[in-house]
Image (cartoon, one colour):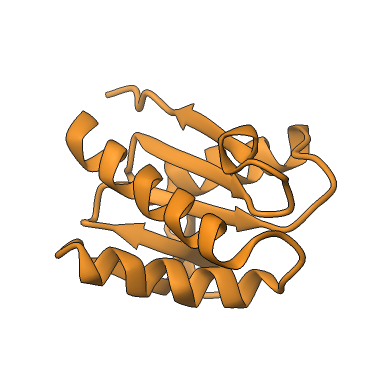
Length: 125
């Protein structure tokens, strides 16, 4: 999966290089999904993520920003800085989806490499 991760991060860097900081999250999301498709990578935008609680399935409008190849969750942000609640949100999405790898991508930075946070969640059997 490291090659896929490299391609995804390269796509995010290209989008940020082209657009720069200061735009809406939805703009980066759409452009990143397009950039992924140009690279032959499947990225599903706003993928519904239902919640199951003790046998009750809830579809309360939770959505993954971009789900890449059914393996990697991309949670996009446009904030002054990433903080613990952003990480916690991504961990929850990883837990609910069954995915193990996600990236927080904050496009409100001067250099995109400063806005990338890798998050791994190891599911227990």
